[in-house]
Image: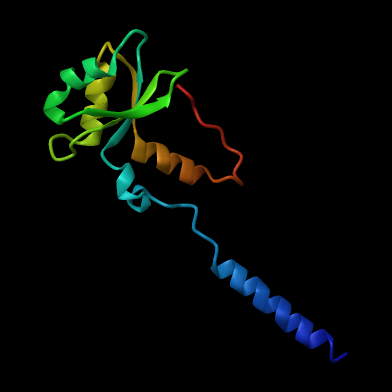
Length: 126
């Protein structure tokens, strides 16, 4: 009988400590690290060079950083957010005949965070 109460207290303490350490999965874009802001994931059309895109959008200081996916022709670009907003630049890039799709890295990270591993949702892949 005396063993039952300490075990119950220990179990209760474990449950409350685990529940308080859970991270909220409804994070917003404000929680995304600053390293992701001012960056775009751009899928280029076939036979388009990154330097061509840099020249076309040089007034926004668009710079190629790296290849995100060679097979999908996706590239990571950086721009100056003080010259243009991310949404406006994405619209301009998506209207370009050299770009298949442009997406903000912040938006992409936020979608991944909101999805969570325990939710059964599907992403629309363009």
